[in-house]
Length: 216
Image (cartoon, rainbow, N blue to C red; front, side, top):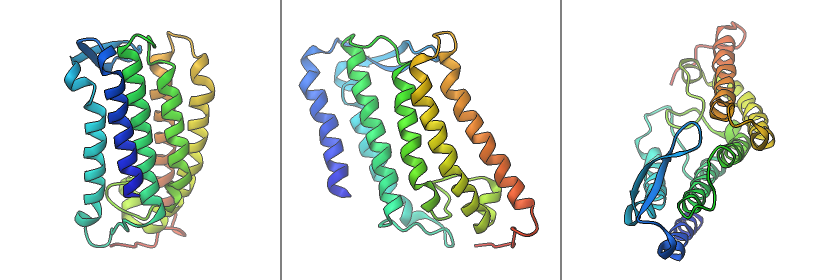
């Protein structure tokens, strides 16, 4: 996995170097809900901001197993744990590509690009979410999933399905959403997904045939 992480980081830096001379003095680093750039950074910072974030994320992710409390251990070599990091880094690389294109005026709005990226992120995460063990850092962390291992397992099994369905909807419908509805499309879909899983985890926890009072 280390090689893959390094390769993604190098790819992000290489892209910045390759187009650096074509970037304007100020590079967009933030977009509002309508998909328009509303914050900028000097080229020397903005061109390498996302690669820096990717590097920090990889470092934090590597540290999580070492700081996890007893009873909520994370196995750093598990396939799901490694895959989730790679999926997130690929997502960040996609954001980086979009930011560079936007800086060079090759794309004008994030309203179409973002649903595709976020949708792909959810589809990828949905395939590994059911395999994530109970922990404090990654997954659907509600009071009820953290309190009971069976509730965690059942919620994440449903979560995998919900993430994939939500991701496919974002990718399939995102390019066709009207400009006026675009600012609410991604937050709306994500909000519905979150609500379904929070309510489900609570409902499962309240069922006496499921809740066993398991504590770490």
